Amino acid sequence: MRNNRNIKITKLAAKKFNLLFFIIIIVSNILQAQPRNYWSTSFNSEASLLAGAVVGGNSDITSIYYNPAGISEIEDQKFALNANLFNLSLTTYKNALGTDLHSDYLGFTVQPRFISYIFKLKKADKLTWQFAIFNRNNNRIAVYDQIEKPVNIIHPAINENYTGNFDFTNEYDDSWGGIGTAYKISDNFIVGGSVLFSIKSLTYMNLININISPITETLPDTINLYSAYSSNYDKVVMYDVRATGKIGVRYKLDRLSFGLNLSLPSVRIMGNSDVKRTISNTGIYDDGIRIEDNYSNESAVYLKSGFKEPVSLSFGIVYKDLSGNNSYYFTTEYFHKIDTYKAIDGTAVIDDEYVPGSDFISYKLGAKSIINFAAGWQFHTSEKFEVLLGFRTNFDPYYVSNSEQYQGLNEFMNPSSNYYHFTGGSKFNYKKLSVIAGIEYILGVNKGLTEFVNFSEPEIGADDNLALAGKKNNDMTYVYNAVGLYFGFTFGF
Image (cartoon, rainbow, N blue to C red; front, side):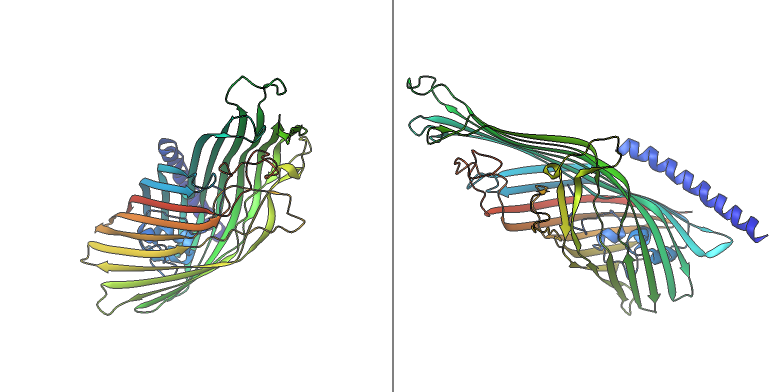
């Protein structure tokens, strides 16, 4: 008898999952930067307006991610769709192409962010289930600049024209989906868990080329017409499918609630990358002596690749005052380090049918241990209306080793920074319908970064890859400002 009951429950859950999956596919088709900072998430929900400080309570539809024990707090079946109305960002790179040579990028995105369905089974009322699909991170950067100036480099007695081109594109997307459940051991103590799958994709292109040629075609008889050229080109197209698990607990008192959530390290399921890299230096003279032309080119497909997620532990607390109108939230999360590894291994392919390359097309990633903090405040002006505010840090964990083992590997060109998120908004409740609207401001600043390229002080042989560029200085400043406007609704039935 029990086996038949379990079969019915499993069939019912499967039907609900198929329905949710169908809805997600339709909505995704209608609405349709490599990973570093871990707290860049923004799900446009009540939890987002509280800056994600919800591990201790009130994580609502985002419980599957922040703390799966919170899934049990939702009494009714709920469907949620939270959308990013728009996100506008301005990224400025000061001295990125050399001293006083700046670049910037104005970004604008509109996309779906979080779709969730939560339900209970009548014959297992202590269990609450959740299916969800959401976008954890989406970023696009596209910067193009060209500089032209007079120089005297190849032949100092000749007036020459120096043209430098910088073309950089980085498109990164990280979408997640999975199932979670929570079990209410007692009115005070709840445990939960979730299994999540992520699909990460990266399109990365970096092209820098330099050309030097005489301004006039009339040259001394001793000098032939010439054109010196130097170029560095990288192109990566990559995807990565991974699985990770979360285990959460929550303990509730009258006005206090505590939560713990353990995020397990991710496990690679599948993924590969196609890489092409070229370095070219031709027609270059130094003190009248021609330097041997250099052309290094390598490409490979279906290379073994993947972006690791760290093990992390978060703790949260929620306190509600005596009036019951004010709730205060605090969450902190520790992320363990990730030793430097080959995110793209140019020497390994996923199938022997394909030909590997060398470490000339390998790329490395790694991370140091960090701790982030978040705080939020919720004020009930009435039974139907709430005001929410939040703040969180989003520290940069990026760190790669330059030891002999990893010294020759490539790094993705993407400035690192700490970010600070400020959120605010309101929630309106009417019967079983909840509507949230809010805004988020993000600030990121970092100084002393290595320039992308040095066009301002060109010289021959200063850069190993670009023979006509200057030595890179550590005087680039990265400034990021972003504003996001969010909207979402949840209804129970």
